[in-house]
Image (tube, rainbow over all chains, first blue to last red; front, side, top):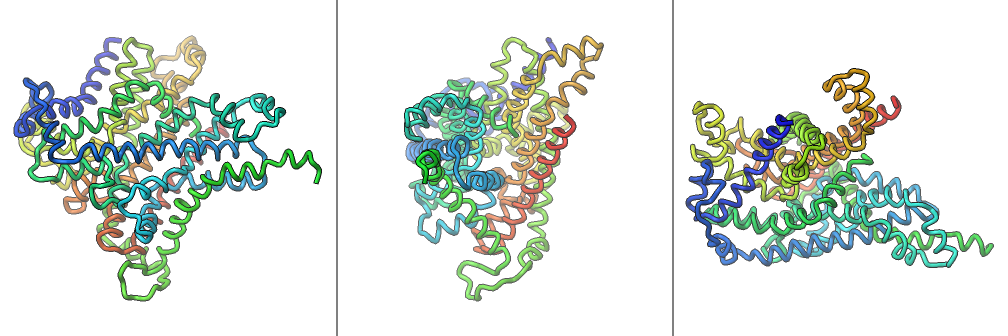
Length: 270
Length: 300
């Protein structure tokens, strides 16, 4: 048992070290970040100043990038929940012609990661003149085959009796979905929301391709650009990083149970 | 038409429900993919005066004769061969340590999972600082400490031999927690009775792990190895931010070459051919996983 704790603690320190260095460095004068990175002072600042944080706001439009990220990710997640859950509901609980065929198509599309369609999608977006817009960063990613699959796996396991009473009352399909299915499916909604949030909050390749100027640029592209902004000031870069990750970290710590469940759910059906 | 059957026919409602998702998937997934599939066999290039032609497999022979693309494939393969076993072993180790019911497990789990919520571009930028050249760099300092002063400071990201391993290390740091959580859920799903029965039969710890735990964990293990392999082939952010594929193509990847080809050189057809190669790799890995899972099910 002592061995387990010792092992866990050493590993935890190694996992934590980059985070501590980031936090400590963000509170130090720029020129000392690099020189102290290898010493104990690299992890525990002897003095703290918020100068780097104010510098970030004067040197770059951090708030704008944050709002872009929140808006883009938020819209994808919320619209995605609705669109994909409704589709999964039709696949899992309704009887209709062409259902199995179309569902197999969805399953087949699950194998296509964004990377395998990024280039043609990029040309499509360019041809339509939609580069550097929110639309190009949101619309293509609302419908998601994997989300449909996760919802489907959950809905198919709900008991028949749930809907039967409502059917006898002649309630509409949409009403059954919103008043009966939805309240009974909170775990799967949380899982899908968290997985798609994690995926789009950190997305880099696609926004790098479609954004040109800083107007609709999200945080992951913004920090890479900020890092190359001369003169290199590590304190500012780390402060940018801390501010970029803090909202997510807070949400993670508050809803940790759901994060862990969400990720685990993606693997159970594998 | 009988009224009863009209009442039971849910086709119109269903089409309305699947409509938005289906249109989205067709327009933004299937259509672009088919476009890539078709253009890979043409000479399409933006701004080119040449007429559009069908060129058979020319684009494919071209990319496979391109040293940079071959290096990219080799890098992805090497990355997968090193990272998948290492990261899975680490994640499994962490999951086993956390599955003993020790006090404080939740805190450790939080710490190990935390890097997963860090966007990869942020991780890449922070690790550039960790790999800073010169004796004051954090990684150089750590290695100096571990080797009792024998370590010569290196410039990790500009060293052709060390750049790719450097990227591997931070990728493991960022991704191990994700796998750990999936494996931990798998471990918790194993009935206690199995382990207890084996213990009663006199099986030692190691034997129980090998003959009880591991077989029960086979599907989650295959799953995490599959997603890590696919992630290895998708490798892009780290290479683009930290090294620009360099030095001397030491960290270039299929995705990096693809984006460069499409962006900087506007060679649509050539980038499409790379897309097709990338897709075939992903397809191959997925097919292998399905086969392995099916085998287990048949054995059961």
